[in-house]
Image 1: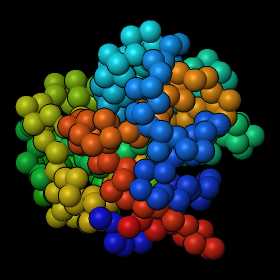
Image 2: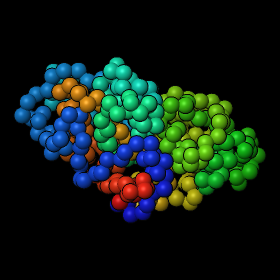
Image 3: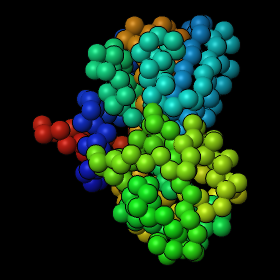
Image 4: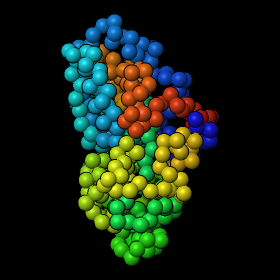
Length: 310
């Protein structure tokens, strides 16, 4: 369980209100008892309709897996979507082109305040994110300060951080990526430099592919996209990138995964969001997909705006 105040959370939370979690409490889209009704509603009544989503690629696989289960129970309901980045997903749900926008960050960080106010946030999981390097890189541990140097362009050779004499190839995510925003918040705080790196990639899958085929490279991914066969996930400040280390607050880079919908969302969308917080998903599927169940943490905000996780 989280026992310490998370200063990085101040960056994520100051942009907008943070819901107070109580178990699996859900501020549903037009529903006050969504969490307690999760799962049981689908059993009592088969859901029909169409649900569409776009947004963060970091937890697209989790949403897809949950959608497959939900549609198996509700064959007259169709759920489909893409993972084109948090900014894209939030813009799409705010404009009504999809019914759910998935995001690694709060909507207030990507949208105008008036647009963000039209949406309801559902926090469905927690995930760690960490630096990953090419298989030929000998460095297996970097401090936040060293990561800041690399991703600002100030450190350009692996020899400067204890590695071989080789240029560091920086594979970044494109602006609008929630994974990039989370990584930069942890590494730089609010003072983020304008540095693109050697490439800016659209999705987590693109990072996996390019990193697997590039020597001397570094990037960052959520834990669920780690692939030991293609690249190496390295420590940060001596701490291994593992969910247990996120839970005890020793690993500094992590995010809450959000699913946003309109306040007047249709029945199928509401039912699927309820399902995301049901025991069917939180009880097993979340961990199977490499995430931490949202019930493992409780987020509160004090009068001064400091966010604490327990």
